[in-house]
Length: 255
Image (cartoon, rainbow, N blue to C red):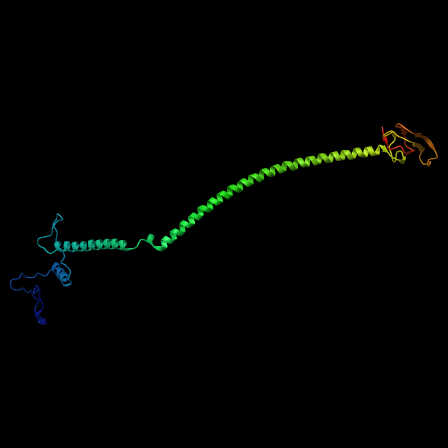
């Protein structure tokens, strides 16, 4: 006991707390472990296991309510989880069996039929395209061949035209030369109208062919030479500064 001053009038505090023990029951010993167990029972929680065997199996015989109660709760929870999984699986199977097949619906069948029709049209169009493309390729090849032939012909025609042009130019030059070397009916001044040289009639003359050579500017009064021919092919030699007159003799050609 703790000594307290009696002069204060306070009785001394007895050692230890009084305890009540029911008849035939073991006395209750207040300890931290017992107080915690009491609070758990008051809250409705299972009592905490007081101990396990060192081997890890079973529970302490002194605490029969610890390990068996925890394992029982775990078994119940596992049973509920297994039952929920089985129900979920069965529900999925039933739902899958009861749902209609979307491929058998009218909408799907109509779309599939439309797709088949479009695919068939596509095949026809592709075949038509291939035929047209082949025909176009053949026509283009034929056109290319014809164009090549036309090009060759145009080149030949152009060459022929150039040859004709050259011939015409040659003929024109020859005609000009011939014209320059030919004397027809009339009076001509040598060196101006006709070239000097020897000239002869192109054919035999008949009747009375008159030719005369005069000094230029004498108006036919200064006769250099003249003659009247009734046959054959007469010839004359002309020089610059002279006039030549031909009548009924035909054409004269320079020799």
